[in-house]
Image 1 (spheres, rainbow, N blue to C red):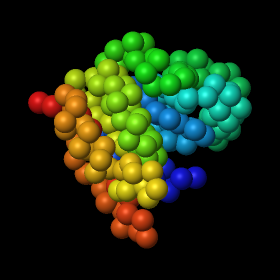
Image 2: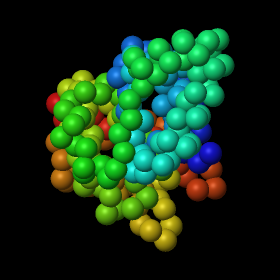
Image 3: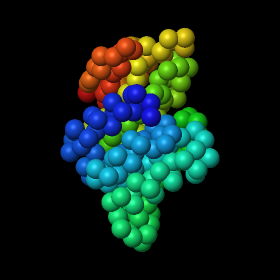
Length: 188
């Protein structure tokens, strides 16, 4: 598990009523799906799991979802019902599915996705297009990714200069390599 994913899991557990309970959630760049699974277990109305690679969703994310739902639901029928009613999937590059997600998410969660500055336009485009007017995105990241140049400061700068969004640091995790969770929302 990525360090920043752990940070985000802790935060959404602590603030589940505000961030998750009864909300439509997008787990952006989900990988194994841990953040989205936690949102499901904490009472999200729906969770959309997104990853670039279809095979990751099919062979990694989906089995993790089913395994974790088994801990809360006793029958296959219950698990099937939860998946049918509350779980969705998107795959491909962020720019390819932006038209499909007009203002449909209360909460967008993402971890370790801002390590490359070249991804900022498409990532912020998903947030702008997919976030409801009163919604929020939480991005867990290292403050700076050595060797590739991305991180929270450069992403916040990009957001401020190029979008109709605003951001602020919600949590700082003081470790060998500093990590942060930033909140992104629409400018008021």
